[in-house]
Image 1 (tube, rainbow, N blue to C red):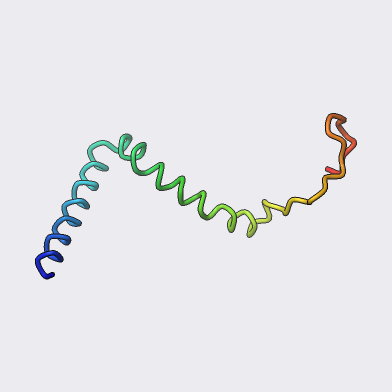
Image 2 (cartoon, one colour):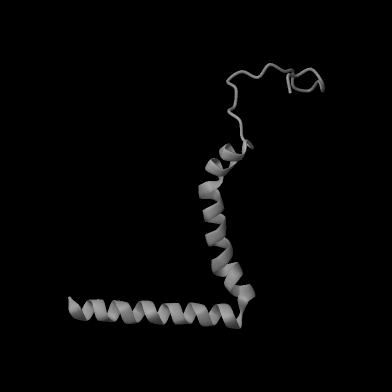
Length: 76
């Protein structure tokens, strides 16, 4: 078990060094491959709480009291 933890630690350290070097050498490809997807998942995961806290979202009504196709004939 001790050997596994040693190799796991060395592997994590090597991965961290490689990611750091990649970010320093080629920031655009790092952003496109790793940075943007991580940021997109983070925003998607927290958007509901942020939007409701800021008042940007409102609950959908079950029935919409408007006539689609006639502008100005709706409640909104």
